Length: 588
Image (cartoon, rainbow, N blue to C red):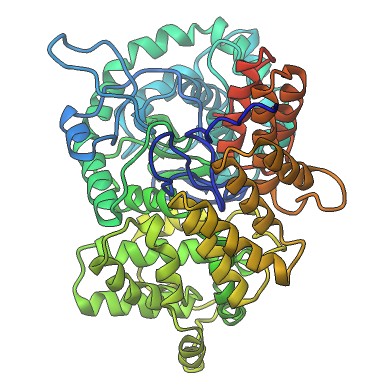
């Protein structure tokens, strides 16, 4: 007799990336990979520093202070800060996926950049005192490793200092810890900016040892600790207010992460980046804390996964993007990436709800959004009123909110909207928002082409999804079978049937369905979420059957799925470790 499969594990998603929790109901907590790479940059001419926005997250290896203990009480599982030696009376706060920290890797990278001559001709007026003091010291460094760094910098320097800084900030975020600074991503996953700096890891490691940067890092810790502590209250408030409005509870078991990196050497303009499920905002320790930037970035962290989690719901609104695509100011990256466009509009709408603005100011801001092509901000802002009157969290309520947007009415409204010309003077917008906006300009994992543009089928998929959430196997199966009756090869419906089999502990049926989705003519090659998680479930079935070699093969296959969701990779890595396989390199 075939062993009964174990109940789906906590980190595994259901249809459209949900969490299974043993002994509890399904909740919508798991993220989907939402991007690849994008880079834009601006240069602060007054201070000589550059601002960069793009996407990735660093593997932080040095200490900060734990955020105030009261945040854990407020949020249950809220913001924490990486640990350093603390006074004895302060109790550790449970680990979470939102942190404030300093990074020795970023610090070393910026030291090397300044030692090489970056912005050496720029006056230090208005700089953070540490940055001004260290630049003079770093530029006087001597030695073979310093010479090699300077030669490398000269060979790779770009005409735009912002573009140059962009490359090294990218490197500082994806490089591993001292003393080797090896990339934490596979070569094919590295951002183009980091690929352009190939060979820099070895030079930086030699520089780190020669100039004793580890000792320097320890010496400047009081400065970083002071800045980290200064961020406690504003970051706490951003997380508390934002998660409170969206009715979300941060789950430290979720592999997604949001990190505030304190680095005075980067410059005055805030840097916001995200890669996959990992978000980082690099603050340069200026006198004024950019709360609006932090909130906007944190909203992206919370909301970016939703359009990809419910692609069949969002797809119905895609005709509105055709209208928005005519806007000259709408970034080209958003014109062919509906999920990113929708997420950006959603972030802006919620941001308007949370900002202290008069009704007139909000209307003016939405007029600007319309003119710039973000035409969904206004209707989403309006239907947020429905969310405020409801009880579910945003990740549960999101499909209802999307359906509340009247596509026909919006198309009619847009007939009278005049898009701003590309060369018009930009309307006054907070500098912080200008800096953070490009966070969503990324080559995201596209919505699966297998999802039909059929309202009836979409409704059935959504119903099956809800039944899975309620662990109603019979109801879910009926909904998915309704889709398959019309679209026999619909992969999300087949995936749903696989989850139904797992809920019913029918190992044979689950293995048959997931096997269908990973090989042969019916393989879900156009849907990374389905493909990756099908491999993970097959690995677990094989593991339960005692076939460890076969289980490891499935877990490795899940890791090899291009653009697979981060949670699936995390589950596959755990599976490899549990079955005695070599654990793949962790993402940052």
